[in-house]
Length: 344
Image (cartoon, rainbow, N blue to C red):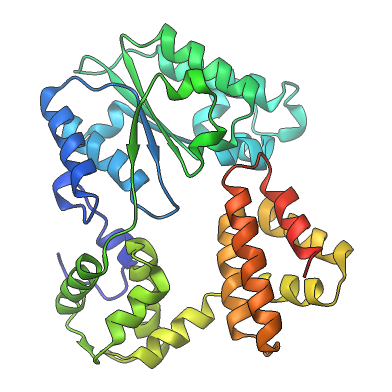
């Protein structure tokens, strides 16, 4: 790993091979054996945000196809399709030749119809120098029932030449026929000792100095989310303009990550301004592209750092824990978030 201080560490230290991934040993071992057998099934990758699902998909493709893996590997984000709609579709240059325009006002088809056409188009393409190609669909829980049934039929139709990897944080939102067509593979966050060992390697590569308990503080915030830990660690160094990592610099970096829209949402909810709270939720989800889980996590930080009485903080933490649990099985994050702020 070359030292380039201005690189984004989540990119710089992104694994290129399954062998380079940290944690999820049993899952990675399974995927490695399947790659070596050259006989992949369809997959359902599921687990919390930032647990390595997307990294594993890209590493798997690189191990299977080599450095030119993009010739046989296609990535779609279902959330972009169905949250941003036609604005996203016309911005993606891959889709212009299919829909024939880059002006959203000229797109007459529904997003679902366009999605089906795009997926059919890519699934029907022949693989290059291989028996089959891979299509990776992230945030698959964003698909409605109609889209999922269409996807199931496409998977069946092109199974001879195309393998699908569906990634989701909420497997219960996938229809049973879709789940049954893929090998379900679970990802989780990295254990504390593995997390700290890995971060210590990064510290050594970047020629940094760590104060005692600094990496423990980093783990406490990230809960084993490698991507989040790398971002916070680099931010701590950037904010302090120092090569020394302390628990205080980690704390400063954590606080600075609270999205600018979260504090107004928290304040509106506390004041009982439900109308404004709903507008702020819409902005966070639609304009800023945040998931319900991400909003919940940032609200949790805002609550902890607030000056509310201890009894109020305890009430709010219990409330968001309840809503986060419901969100795992709900069909609409926005409804759950609106219900939550109405109870602040």
